[in-house]
Image 1: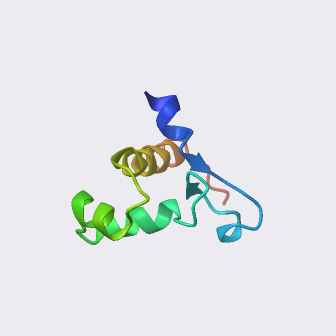
Image 2 (image 1 turned 90 degrees about the vertical axis):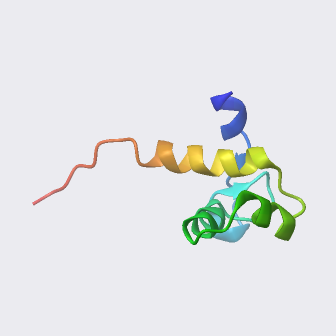
Length: 76
Protein backbone atom coordinates (compact mmCIF):
# COMPACT_ATOMS: atom_id res chain seq x y z
CA UNK A 1 0.00 0.00 0.00
CA UNK A 2 2.84 2.38 0.86
CA UNK A 3 4.45 2.10 -2.56
CA UNK A 4 1.18 2.61 -4.42
CA UNK A 5 0.44 5.73 -2.36
CA UNK A 6 3.88 7.18 -2.98
CA UNK A 7 3.50 6.62 -6.73
CA UNK A 8 0.84 9.35 -6.60
CA UNK A 9 3.57 11.88 -5.83
CA UNK A 10 5.26 13.25 -8.93
CA UNK A 11 8.09 15.70 -9.48
CA UNK A 12 8.42 17.28 -12.92
CA UNK A 13 10.75 19.98 -14.18
CA UNK A 14 8.75 23.03 -15.17
CA UNK A 15 5.71 22.12 -13.09
CA UNK A 16 5.27 23.90 -9.77
CA UNK A 17 8.95 24.73 -9.69
CA UNK A 18 9.93 21.07 -9.56
CA UNK A 19 8.18 20.61 -6.22
CA UNK A 20 6.33 17.39 -5.36
CA UNK A 21 2.78 17.36 -6.74
CA UNK A 22 -0.17 15.01 -6.76
CA UNK A 23 -0.40 12.76 -9.84
CA UNK A 24 1.12 15.31 -12.20
CA UNK A 25 -1.50 17.91 -11.34
CA UNK A 26 -0.58 21.40 -10.28
CA UNK A 27 -1.54 20.66 -6.70
CA UNK A 28 1.57 20.60 -4.53
CA UNK A 29 2.00 18.25 -1.60
CA UNK A 30 2.78 21.28 0.55
CA UNK A 31 -0.54 22.90 -0.40
CA UNK A 32 -2.46 19.89 0.87
CA UNK A 33 -0.40 19.72 4.05
CA UNK A 34 -1.04 23.39 4.76
CA UNK A 35 -4.77 22.95 4.23
CA UNK A 36 -4.81 20.06 6.67
CA UNK A 37 -2.69 22.00 9.16
CA UNK A 38 -5.22 24.84 9.02
CA UNK A 39 -8.06 22.48 9.98
CA UNK A 40 -9.55 21.89 6.53
CA UNK A 41 -11.29 18.54 6.56
CA UNK A 42 -10.68 15.86 3.98
CA UNK A 43 -14.24 16.36 2.78
CA UNK A 44 -13.72 20.11 2.33
CA UNK A 45 -10.48 19.62 0.40
CA UNK A 46 -12.04 17.02 -1.87
CA UNK A 47 -15.06 19.27 -2.49
CA UNK A 48 -12.80 22.20 -3.39
CA UNK A 49 -10.54 20.05 -5.60
CA UNK A 50 -12.77 17.53 -7.40
CA UNK A 51 -9.82 16.01 -9.27
CA UNK A 52 -8.36 14.76 -5.98
CA UNK A 53 -9.06 11.40 -4.39
CA UNK A 54 -8.83 10.44 -0.70
CA UNK A 55 -5.66 8.45 -1.41
CA UNK A 56 -4.03 11.64 -2.71
CA UNK A 57 -4.28 13.16 0.76
CA UNK A 58 -2.95 9.98 2.33
CA UNK A 59 -0.08 10.05 -0.13
CA UNK A 60 0.78 13.64 0.79
CA UNK A 61 0.88 12.75 4.49
CA UNK A 62 2.97 9.65 3.86
CA UNK A 63 5.37 11.58 1.64
CA UNK A 64 5.83 14.21 4.36
CA UNK A 65 6.41 11.50 6.96
CA UNK A 66 9.06 9.86 4.77
CA UNK A 67 10.78 13.20 4.18
CA UNK A 68 11.12 13.82 7.91
CA UNK A 69 12.04 10.31 9.00
CA UNK A 70 15.78 10.57 8.41
CA UNK A 71 18.42 11.74 10.83
CA UNK A 72 19.33 15.40 10.53
CA UNK A 73 23.05 16.10 10.69
CA UNK A 74 24.04 19.56 11.84
CA UNK A 75 27.45 21.04 11.15
CA UNK A 76 28.94 23.30 13.77
